[in-house]
Amino acid sequence: MFKKIIKPFQDVLLERKLCVGCTGDLNNCKKLGNLSERRMLVQCKCRRRYVFDKEMNKYQRATFSEEQQVLKQIAKDRE
Image (cartoon, rainbow, N blue to C red; front, side, top):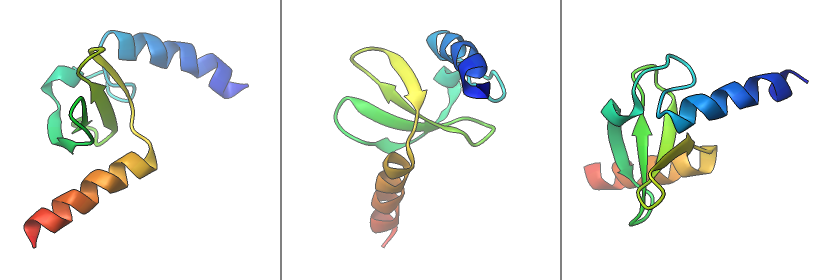
């Protein structure tokens, strides 16, 4: 039930390109890496991670597997 109440508010914040945790502007986030040619992983100042879809110009919360994919790429690049 709690998710049914919170989700609409989070959707509105993401439509306005604001972080659901700190309401910071997602356009000013740190870019961590690319998931594909059109999708990029970004991190807010409160350390929440989002996926930005360049074609649709929208943000969504990153899944654990998406985060791990980029973190593995970063680790490979450092080697």
